[in-house]
Image (cartoon, rainbow, N blue to C red; front, side):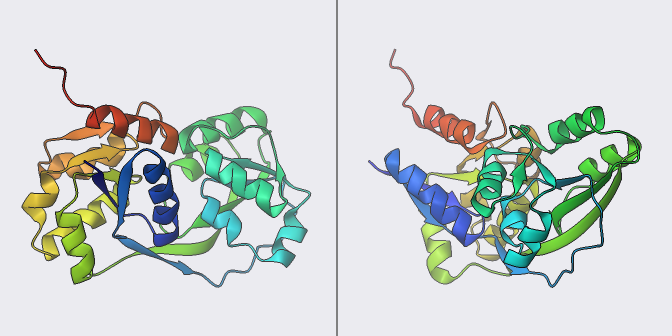
Length: 242
């Protein structure tokens, strides 16, 4: 029997994940909890010693002229998807990607001298941890907000029905997990959604689900999609008999 897995990320991200699920014999059910909106943003004046990004979407949001102007500045990123976006857009990737934003902040604090100026390619809605850690290390961080991930007010009737027939859900961020819970409640699916198998990128991502009373929650061993999908596969394996 094909397992159906609800995907609440933005539509383009969910489509990519659905393809990964199909290769593993699962069906991805796309019901985004957020919508992406580009923000009109002018890049601040440099010079900058480094670029920083934790989101591939922020990198892709740069226009051709902006990319050309930043091409010579080393770019430090978190996550394989951000690294891939950097390569695709011709930016100067500075080494391998860090595992996550916390690891990236620690790397930059060790590597760059105090007073170094960093341009953070960011979304509007983000955690303050990276900027706070870098500022505490004496680095000067200027963020440019290139997109907003805005909460949807409701699922369509088709999306709600599809989610109701899912076996599990994947969660990539704490914020999106919280929005998904709200959408399920508005659709009259709170109890059904709570009963799903919830596979989360990290324990932090799982917190809204824990607080809501979801009983079947699994967290990935590392905060990337490969480990998330591996955790899903393990969770879906039938229990051994006897």
